[in-house]
Length: 208
Image (cartoon, rainbow, N blue to C red; front, side, top):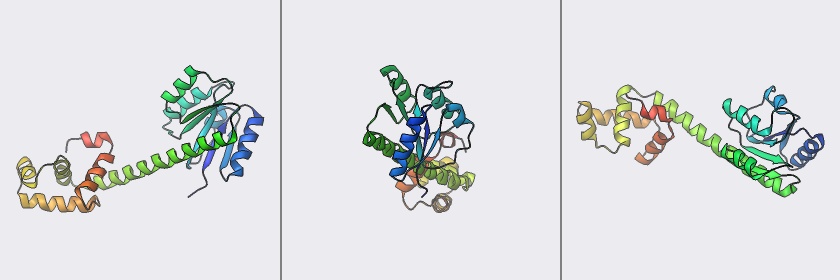
């Protein structure tokens, strides 16, 4: 796995240097920007990690940047760091999905603990996304009839009930069910149901 990457955005050069050195000292790579616009104009690698954003900056604020990244579909966990934090600001940040909200000056260990939690959260959401992508690929490999049988199975219907609903024989349902289970790489109902639950809502709602 790549070394975690922390992206830091703060208009204070001293803060950027201090935080970068601290992260590097514990084996975490850090790339720093002096403004939100500088970050938005850059090509960011797709790496496990998190963002550390100063709230009050010239031009776009950290909260503005949070919204801009969300519009781009970037869900990397965000830690806010500010010397002027207040309750309303932190509530707004957390409601928008911030991982943490720290007030300067922050203890090194408190900062590193927040970074660790954010990186773990990013790893977790990446694992979920990977499972979902696999499930979608497997689902798309099914025939229309296999998808219909899948829907019946996850709904808890018996083979004879699915056969009646689809107007086919129970033997044919068993054949489709066997093929569907193989394609979905599921060895049990529980595994199949979990794959089904990881599919995007639009696929689960689609009529086959």
